[in-house]
Image (cartoon, rainbow, N blue to C red; front, side, top):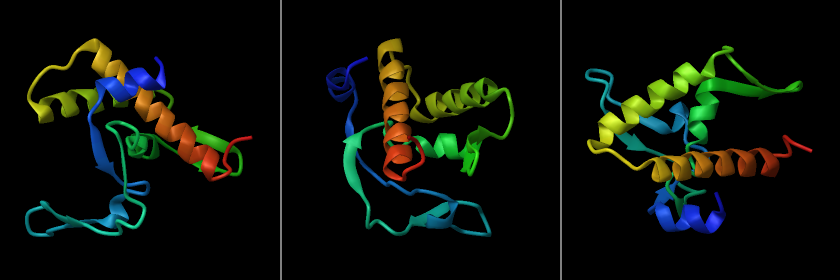
Length: 119
């Protein structure tokens, strides 16, 4: 899939380069998200570019390079898509899903390269 196709298929949304659990405020009594802080690196990008949080949930980068916490990450990715599709409440085309996944990979590679994590 080409960058132009991703851009045409996906909505452009406000994203965060470093969204993590440390930046999300949660009400302890009910578990509801009450806020998100640290918007200094916010950008407008095609939806999916900032799904690098999915990769961060599945693995980590160390001196030896990127590694996943468990061998079967496909099971966790399928769970992500199930929850995601249930959350939006309507089906999406295979082409759109592929565009979201391509954007996620693009965001992951861009973040990894900009942090000097790949050669």
